[in-house]
Amino acid sequence: MRSNGFRGSREYHCGFTALRAQGRAQGAPSLAREPIDPEANAESDGASASETITPAVSASESTTESDPPVGPASDEGVFSSGEVRESLAFADNATAVALYGDGEQTLRLLERSIGVAVNARGNELELEGAADRVALTRRVLEELYASIERGQSVRNADVRHVIRMVSSQPDVQLSDVYENILTRGSRKVIRAKNLKQRRYVDTIRKHDVAIAIGPAGTGKTYLAMAMAVAALHQKEVSRIILTRPAVEAGERLGFLPGDLSDKVDPYMRPLYDALRDMMDMEKAQRLIERGTIEVAPLAFMRGRTLNDSFVILDEAQNTTGEQMKMFLTRLGENSQAVITGDVTQVDLPKGTLSGLVEARKVLTGVRGIGFQYFEARDVVRHPLVQSIIQAYDRARSEKDEGRG
Image 1 (cartoon, one colour):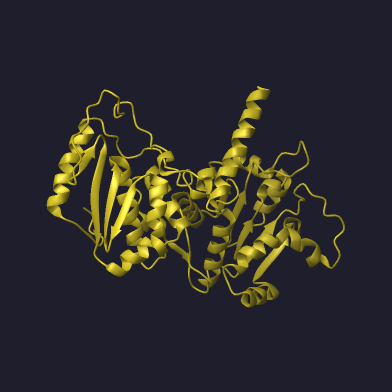
Image 2 (cartoon, rainbow, N blue to C red):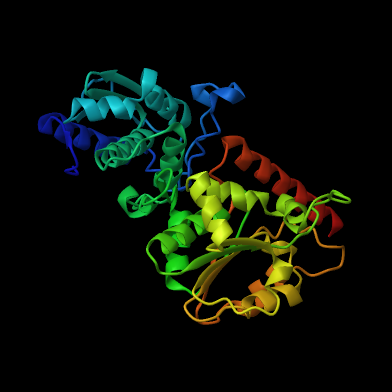
C-alpha cells in the first residue's frame, strides 16, 4: 500500500486481497482500460447510479452468466459476484474533511461518476461496489488526498479530471501532472489539468515553436498565455506578443467606429480576457501601454523581426498559407512561438486552404518544432462542452460517410 498519508488494517486488507484474487479467478473484471466518463452520469442529465458507464473488459476477463457466485455477502472483502467492500482511512482529519468537500460533494460525485457506494465515518471511508470500480475510486481518492497535502485545492472539475486520467492512464501520478505553471505575480495558481495539458507544457518548454491543434476548451491558448507570463516574470524574454488573424467568424461586423485600437479590439478580446485572468488589470494595462505586452492583428506582424519575445498566434486555423509562413519567419534571437487553432472551425472563404492545416503537413518532423494534439475528451471547460463537441463530431462523420 502506498505510503502517502493512508493507513488501514493490515489484517483486513490482507484478507481482502486474498478474496479479491478469488473473485478475479471467478471472472471479476479488471481495472478499467477505457476512461470512465464522469459526465455520463451527472445529476443534470437525470441519470441514476445504475446508468454509470461500464469499463471495458477484455474477452478473457469478461463475466458470463455461467460464472458461479464468489460467495455469500461478507464484510471481509468479496460479498457478491465481482463485488467487494473495502475500507480506507486517512491519517489527518482536517485533510480528510477538505477531501470530502462541503456536504461530502466529492464523495457524492464519485458515487455518481464511477458507480460505487462511498460512506464516510470520520476519517474513514467504506467503498462498496464492483472490484474494478472500487480500485479506481480508491486510486482517485489517494491522488486527491495527496494533492491536498501538497497545498492544492480540489474542486468538482478537478475530481472529474482525475477520474478521466486515472481510468485512462492507470500509471499516471498526479504529482507529475499538476505542476504549477504560473504562481508569481498571478491572480491565481495556474497548472495543467490533465496529461495532455502537461505534455503541451513540456512541448512548449522543449521547442522554439510549439503548435497545438484541437477543439475549443482544451486550454491551448490559456496555457500558452500562462507560459508567456511566466517567461516574462522570470526575465527569460522582455516582451509578450499576442496576435490572431482578424477574420469574421460567420458574422458581418460592418463599419466599426473609433480609432484603430477600437476597430481591432473585438478580434483581440479573448486574448485580453485570458491576460487579465492572470494578472492585475492595472498592471496588465501598464505593460500594454509600455509595449511590454503587445496585442495586435496578424497583419501587423509583416516586415518585423521579433527578438527576445514570447509570441502567441491564436486562431491559427484562420490564417492562409502565406500568412502562416510570414508569421513563422518573424522569429528573431531568443524568441519562441506558440501557435494554436482548431482545424474544424475554419472561417476562411470557401476553397481557401487553412495555413494551420498546411503547416501540419509541411512542418511535421522539422527539428525545433513540436506538435501537441487535443481531443474532445481533453476539454476542461463546462462539462457540457465535451458532449457538444462530440455530438458535432459524430454528425460531421455521419455526413462525410453519407457523401462517400
